[in-house]
Length: 168
Image 1: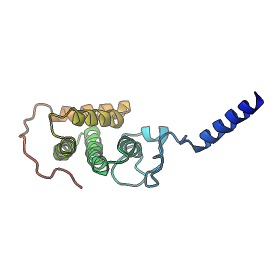
Image 2 (image 1 turned 135 degrees about the vertical axis):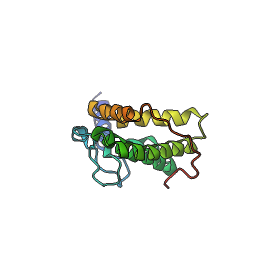
Image 3 (image 1 turned 90 degrees about the vertical axis):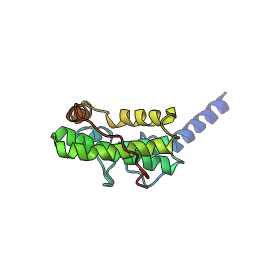
Image 4 (image 1 turned 180 degrees about the horizontal axis):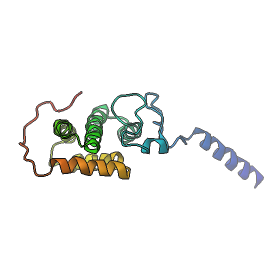
């Protein structure tokens, strides 16, 4: 009995020591920034410690979602960058920037569609939904998104075919 208890205890200690208890700090990818935790939710901008235009928490979530698919990560990062600009413009009420960044948002959405087999593929919708949930993870960010969308409300936009929508 004591032998089984000792083996169980040693196994538990070993597994605990080897697990990632960082709360999603990027696992085995040393290029990911640390998880900002609650500090990343204090402002609309969040924390972008590597200044790549993608909030650290979103960058980590993208990597965790697609650790072995760099092209899908690039598409989602393109969306995250555009969305971040949209939130900042929406919060500021900067109409000119809102209309400019909408074109970036469109390109990013086309890129996600391209990476996931087109508009008929439900995977593209799932990718967008998952990122929306991560990006809009505070009341302030949701409010900024509503302001962004309100600024676009009532306007007409042409649908353009975008060739090569992906930045990478």
